[in-house]
Length: 407
Image (cartoon, rainbow, N blue to C red; front, side):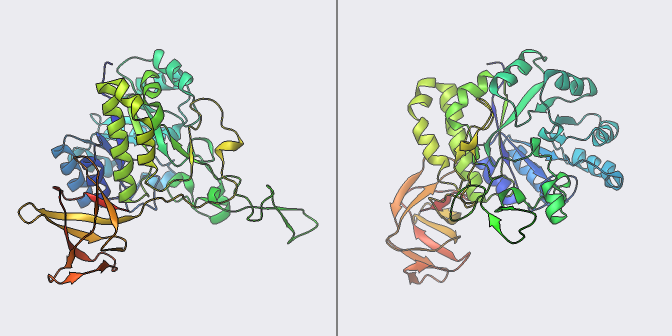
């Protein structure tokens, strides 16, 4: 293996960036308030972005910024200044899909690494070579490629041109995310970051001469969700991903929760490290890794296009709801080694007597029974029912800020 395999995490805001890095991400990708494709994520102010880059670099992680809109003429206003700012704060790369945006970046920040977004529909090695000639250093594969196709691309491009691909998270019904449903049904442009996710809505058939008579597309008393895909999960196929030539394993989820980011990144970090250390360990623990990622909410799992074209089994026709096996109940703010008490910010209700787990960014997950806890004033309490309530909890093992409680 010539290069280290990179685990690339989503960072929807500053807290999620810090969690991603502390839980094992080698790099994070994020968006500013403009030019990216996740307008519903909190995204980063310039001040937060500067702090995020400093935090990531302090922990030997990289930061990539999404500038992957398909630009209209007025989108270029302020773009050059934005790229200069990203260069000034030492962002490691920008993700771009539009040739016009690419040309601005090459002109104003010629030394900035450019990654070509999956939005650019990168489906063949000729396209990869085209972008490399213009100065790109990494190509994010289209979602619609098999591992065999990616291997063919890898075999036909120089070793210094990197391949990145999504390995976990939500799938889009449209080709590499280039969608017009949102524009048509809600007036929100999916190609400029404002997707309203109509692929998750419930649909029925209506015959033209019988308005108001809704016929289910799939026979079910709850209707059907014909566009609603299962979530991608490739944690059981780390060797196959690496063998195909993918150098960066990308997790989707900039609008997901901090709990999702920590849970999924920790599981993939362990899986990658175990495989690199000893493949036998990885194969023995595959069920464990899968069970770990299932502790974050998900819509069922699929391998997407990696082993062939998806069929009807990759869709969920009966609901758009998530499967949620675990609740995120608290975030560690501080830990006092002398007393053994952790300071916790409550995120969901828990009570004395609950069996809980602590998910640690560094260190193994452990379980315990909540036996005693106190409010900020030192009063003994039996439950923590209030959102973001600060409590003191007796814990038998060392914890660190951003470790998480779940049950």
